[in-house]
Image 1 (cartoon, one colour):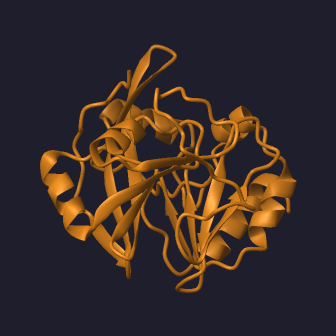
Image 2 (image 1 turned 135 degrees about the vertical axis):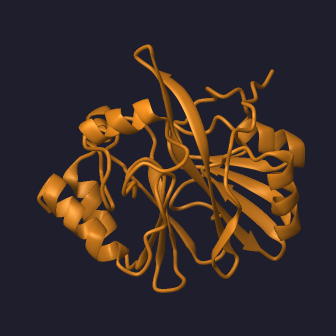
Image 3 (image 1 turned 30 degrees about the horizontal axis):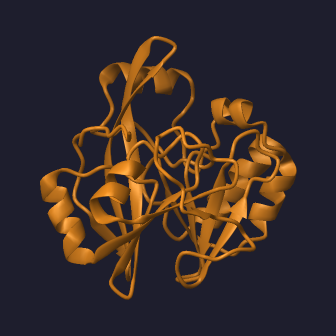
Length: 238
């Protein structure tokens, strides 16, 4: 039996590039007995009328109407071990296939249809996968070879410049104190949880990209490579 999370407050679906869309919404979770409210994002890639949802966020009925106007939900793609709570909703509602990284267990009670690997089938054209091969838990970025290169990340690289409308005051204050906010940031907590080695980020720096669309924070357009490279240098010395 799948467990579905209700639809929480979210914004409008915005077109970032041709056939690439972005929507921000709410995430509520408990950590060490503290309820956290912060934002999260879903990226939508359209190809021949079929939609791929990356870092899924459940939308309200009005949001779903807007989504359906873009095309038919065909694939749900999970690239972060700590995301996926809304995958089952989209899989069940639209009979979409679920793509997930090797080693991702079915913690959300949703059958994984396709194991998403760098060498295997890719979900849409001009797409490649870069897994963090040294990570303790499965995580990857997707590279789209369009518009100078677009990087899609989950928790690895965030672009929370500051708290937005989906943050509670308490969570915003806590994240500010812990240094979570910053351009193209790689949080210390993520680093500790994942134990990713510098070699993975050396590989990432070899990718050509200009833009970053993360599961957390604003779209980072045009200067993403320089900003990400600066963060990697700061955090990993490479």
